[in-house]
Image (tube, rainbow, N blue to C red; front, side, top):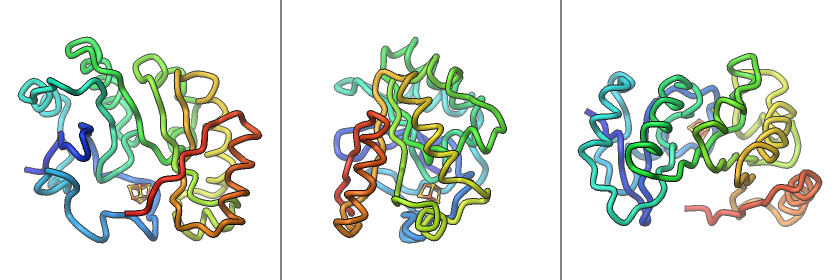
Length: 198
Ligand code: SF4
């Protein structure tokens, strides 16, 4: 069975689904089967709510104050389970909750789910990936049309709803594209995290 909880660089992560509405050219899933101390992050079948709760109950959260929903898939594609597990982790173990997302969840679900997320999640990191819709579509290959404007709209809604919201890119982008991404973030008052590519 695939790992549901795993640790990487002093953070604990929840890998709740392998579903995703993108097919990013850089996705780590196409390079290796696991991250950190996980043996594999590929689920033969996505875990049930009870299996995720059991994984939490069996995990020693000593020394961790945050649980990050981020695995081999887009956590918001398993929305009901994400919301229930985030609430459980917060109430049962006093953890802050972070969501790492591609930011397309409102498009995927056909409604604004930010209020539902904000009720149980403290901070959100949204993968911006590129400064224009054309570049975004080329690199993330989303299932939907108009993914980039939907991502930006989600980011603005998130900024107003969560204690902390950030957009993220990797440092391999050319300097002019990083500057354009910085402008997108600044215009919305959102912090831009420039991650080191690994
Ligand atoms: S959104 Fe994340 S999980 Fe989905 S293909 Fe892109 S990098 Fe992979």
